[in-house]
Length: 79
Length: 366
Image: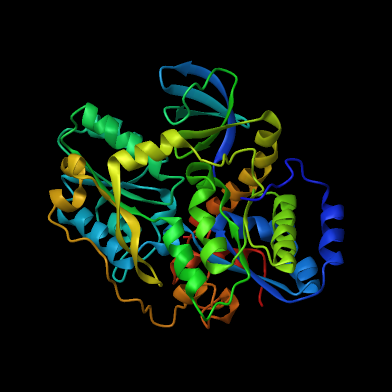
C-alpha cells in the first residue's frame, strides 16, 4: 500500500492534474509537490503526487507496479 | 548520513562484491511489505541469500496487517449501527481483513454501506453528493499515505463539510523500528528501510538506529538491483563496524523528505499511542486529529473510544510473530493449509503486501 506509482502530468488545473501512468490516466492532486508543472514526472500515491522524479526512474518502477496490481487483483478475486 | 553512489553499478558487479566479503551469517529485516514483494521478484532467496547465509525477515510494514482487530470490529459495528445513514469508505485491501468478530466485507454482506476509495480525497465529493449521509473514512497507512488524508481534512475544513469524519488509524515507522531494534529475540544486523515512506520523512528519523543501536540501515528502491545494492551496503557496513543510514534511493528520497507533506501532516495530526495488531501498544506510534479538526473526528462524532490495547492472541494464527520477524510464514501451522489467500485466517495472508501472502504466492515453503 505504500507503493507509489510513477506517471507524467498531462493536464494541470490549479492543484489537480491528470497523470498518465502506463496506458491509463489518473486524477492526482499536486498540493504536496509545490511547483509541479506540465510534463513533470511524479510519483503518485492514493490520489496525491508525493514527489517529482526523472523519466528514467519513472519507467523503471512501472514494471513492478504492473505485477503488484495483478497480484492484489488475484487475491481480491479469491473470495 | 553516508554517501551512496548515485548511479548503481550492474548486478553482476554488486554480487561479485558481496561474494568478496567474508562469509558470516547475517540477519536483516525488510520493513516494507512492497520490499517483501521485490525480494521475491528478484529471485535471490534460495540463491544469493542462501549462498551467503543472509537471512532476510519481513517486518511490520504492511498497513492492513498491523491494523488492530478491535478497530476493524469498531468500524464494522459502526457501519451496521445505522446502515441507512452511515457510509464507511476505505482502501480496498482492508475489506477482507477480519477483526475479532467480523470484517468490513462481512458487514457489507449484512447490509452495511461500505465503499472502496482509491484516494481519501474521494470522500469530499461523496460527502457533498450525499448530504443526508455520514461519510466515515477508515484511514490506515504509514507516512506515505498520511499527507493525502491531511490535505483532504484541510479541504473538508475549508468547505465546512458537516457530514465527513475520519477514523484515523495511522502508523508511524520510526517508533516500531525502535521496538524491533531493542527486541533481544530478534538479533538483527540491520534494516532495509522503506523507500516511499522515506520520500515523505527523509533520512533523519532513522538516525537513532545507527547512533543508539549500532544498526545500519539502507533506504532502498524496489528493483532487484536496488535490493542487492542495499544488501551489499549493509554487509559492508557491518564488516567495517561502521553503521550508518545510507540513502540508496536518492532519485525520490531527499535527505529532508517532502517538507510540504510533513508540514501538512503536522498541521492536522499529532502523535499518540497506537495498537499494532499482533505486536501490541507502542507509545507515540499513531495519529490523532488535532483539536482544530475535532469536528472531523469519527471517535468524537460517534462516541467511540480509541483502541490502544487489544488482545494480541488470534488462536493458532501467528501473524504477530511474523510481523516481528520472529518466525517465517511457513513456520505457522495454518500456513498453506487452513490459511490461504483464498481463505485467509490472518491479516498477513489478506494483503498483497503481507508476508504470508507473498511466501504463498512465490511458493516459498521454508
